[in-house]
Image 1 (cartoon, rainbow, N blue to C red):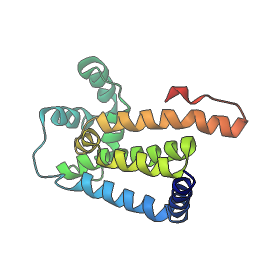
Image 2 (cartoon, one colour):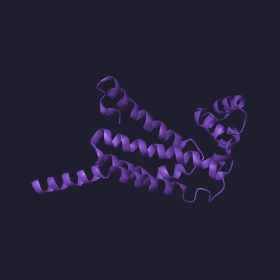
Image 3 (spheres, one colour):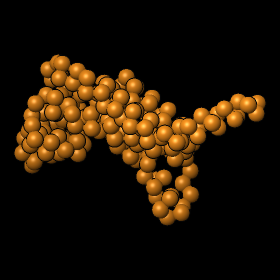
Image 4 (cartoon, helix red, strand yellow):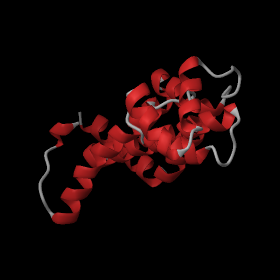
Length: 173
């Protein structure tokens, strides 16, 4: 029992020592998986609707998103301004890739805050290869944005509890 604890402690120290290297490797792997084949197929129907609504002017965007599409308009507003750079299929989907990368980093932070560096790296690696996360990161839709929003909403109570010395239970996860 003592030997296995010592081995685990040595492994944990190794991860802690090279944590930035492992975090960078997880980010590079996650980015590569998400960008691979990003423009291999044309826009789906849902992506086309997102494009159509986001390409309208900002006043019409609100009415179209709330009345017709019945979705919250924040992602469409981001996509609207994102499309000023380019309107290629790759570029439209790349916003979701960025959102998904924020989710990966958020999961690493949540894992580190809850249980330490080992848990954070495992959580980041699982999120990096999670098929649904990768699939929605390659879609010009709100799905990656929703995952990012949920991750950020889980990080905020931890930041608030650290900032104001208030105890916030981890049961919200």
